[in-house]
Length: 273
Image 1: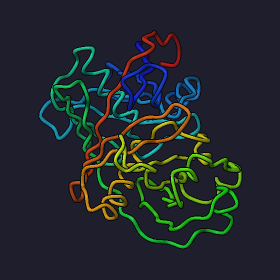
Image 2 (image 1 turned 60 degrees about the vertical axis):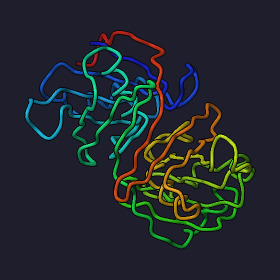
Image 3 (image 1 turned 180 degrees about the vertical axis):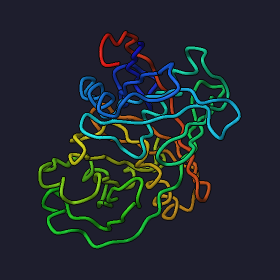
């Protein structure tokens, strides 16, 4: 069975966020523990598994995402990676609909080679910083927001871009601060540059200390920065070591996330199924 490693939210190999992608030819998923074993072996922030659905339904493919430690409700970069594989291998064209834990998610191939994902916008609720958050993160929040059921992160606003880039969290302590992870964000130092805001994402609770580029987090970053800027179309930089740009378009209850992807490894899975 084919397995691919795809760098998402980048047009250059060895940058952006790598995801494992396994496209199954069966009509159902194997047992969950088998999928988890493969994801643990791949050992990237997420590995995506997809299988085709019968024609005529609400979705074309079923899609699930696993970290090395657990299954998650929503993942942007591995969805982008899966759509990239389907399009570049000729399996799909145009718009592809995925049935997921977060409902039907659509991806559309654009003429410039990018892909646009249509995701639910995360609901933001202002909350008090949980005890120990500032100490675990290593910075004092200006504001903290809960991002709802499916994202499950705390969105933490910091003073400036330099504060976000300088973070060196205590991951063991940070794991107890949210259901999934912590997204740290601030306005770009140069708002006239290539991006309007920066972020970093930390997810030690699900086995990922720092995620290179987190698509799902941008469904919360979109309404947050739209409210502050008065603009619905923005670009965010996730300032990890690998780095990546995410173009966001807020459309009320939906957020469009646009990015590129590059396949860097195309191999064969010899065990697990």
